[in-house]
Amino acid sequence: LEAEVRRREKLAAVGNLAAGVAHEIRNPLSSIRGYAAYFGGKFAPGSDDRQAAEIMVREVDRLNRVISELIEFARPSDLERRPVRLSDLAGHAARLIRPDALASGVSIELDKADDDPEVLADPDRMAQAVLNLCLNAVQAMEAGGVMGLRVGLVPDGRAFLEVTDTGVGIDPAERDRLFDPYYTTKSRGTGLGLPIAHKIVAAHGGEIRLTVRPQGGTSAMVVLPMDGVGDTNDAEEDDAGERSRS
Ligand code: ADP
Image (cartoon, rainbow, N blue to C red; front, side, top):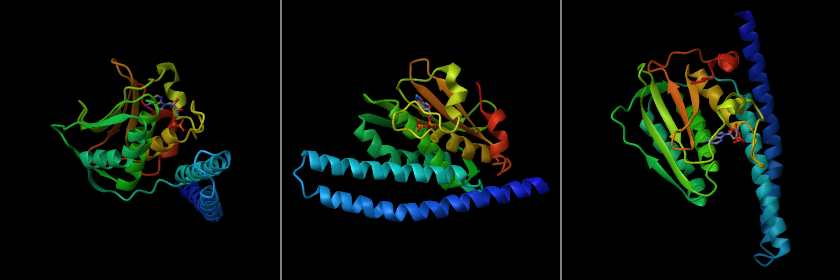
């Protein structure tokens, strides 16, 4: 127990450090972004100079995203749980992902379920996990497609929230590797989306099942205990075992 407490304190320290450093980096980044946009505006749209400035803005946005993900990954899994209806979580994720989906020609289908379970969960952290799965779904459909969100109960009585896509699909032999930190097949990926989602879901006592859909594309299913039981700080220990192979 003492070791566990020490480990938790150490993780919290790392999280604080990451958050502190991130703050110091974000402020200058924000100035850089602002001035790059300002100078870019002085050149004609489509000109080389304008495009250079636009690249600067985009790259700053990317740096900001990488920093956010690093903080999220280093953060200890302290949860503030309250009753959360899964359809609300799905609806929230759908609203957040809509701009990305529109930009990629992806339509979103929210399935009305017979069972709409309520779980004890930290709504903010869980929204982050579901959003990461949605981002992956949209990014797997560069030429457009359909992203589905569905909630319900699995046969053993646990609750699920499933994100489906009609995208490139995953190689079942690669599935476990996809959860490794920094593993990415995208030119601009961070490889932290799934590890973060896994960490959050594992802290809730749940699991993420990645499967190939028979009709093509991928299903990412978050399965959660109904009573919300599950040690809130076991995410790291669970990393090897919890990952579903179904
Ligand atoms: P990133 O999105 O930055 O690459 P992730 O950890 O979220 O990081 O994902 C790791 C890898 O898993 C992706 O690069 C991709 O190859 C694969 N992957 C995840 N979700 C999907 C999906 N829905 N369809 C196809 N491949 C996926």
